[in-house]
Amino acid sequence: MVNVLMVIAPAVFRDEEYEHPKQVLEGRGATITTASRAPGECRGKLGMTAEATIGIADAAASDYDAVVFIGGGGAEVFFDDPDAHRLAQEAVAGGGVVGAICIAPSILARAGLLRDVRATAFQSQREDLISHGAVWTGAPVEVSGPIVTANGPDAARAFGWAIGDVLGLP
Image 1 (cartoon, rainbow, N blue to C red):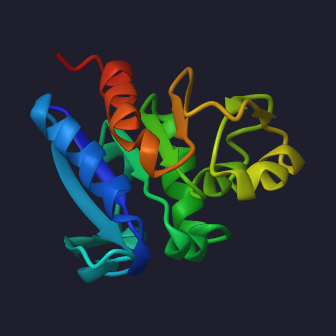
Image 2 (cartoon, rainbow, N blue to C red):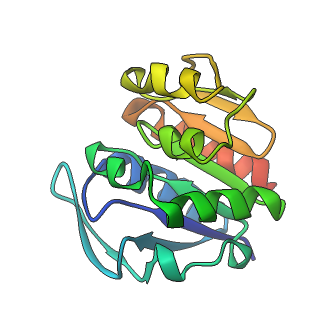
């Protein structure tokens, strides 16, 4: 069984960037756990609600095959969050997959994971990624080894498929 941790902001996560990859990954056999700052109800930009069952401070990357950071304006709360950085760093160090979409690739960049890595994000994050050493591509989805990045809502399904492919899901 493949376990995926999806990290969303407590408020203003991007609904389709959470919902579409979740649907794709569950459809391919993955089990999804949703995390946020703390357990409880989270609200998307477009009104979706999702239940976080674990706080990121209590999450261990070793319990998951992938850690995926969802975008939307609220994701900014994780840009410099030490628990978010720890999760991403531990996932990569442990051989797991790390994904981030929209503005969330800035979390990975600031955690030091995108140095010399081909990556994409929402256009507003271009300079942030470059200043942290990423090789900016601007593509809808970019796969660089175990790191998958995507540029926004229109790429959400393809992002889910790319993560599933890296995980080797059917």
